[in-house]
Length: 87
Image 1 (cartoon, rainbow, N blue to C red):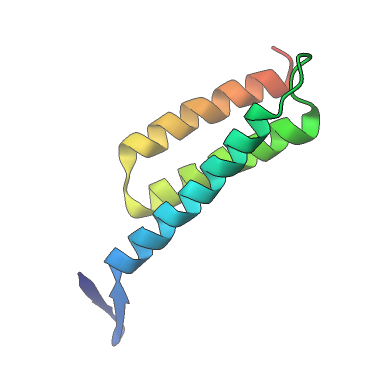
Image 2: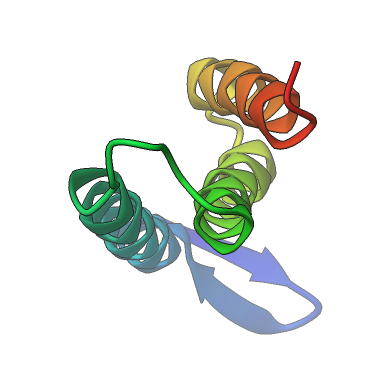
């Protein structure tokens, strides 16, 4: 699908593919951190990295109109924020 904007052509399919590739990278980073957690739990740096990954996914999902993904990642962000605040 191509969309014309000010004389330029934007390939939405390609942009969606890039978004999902970026999501896969963020999810892999989150998984790597979660699998490596010590028994005492994540440190501040690890929590912030997981939060940033979720935030990036949420932002991209919002841009591309993936409402369900935006809602899920917003809930994840809220939970991670509670953990960061030790609530």
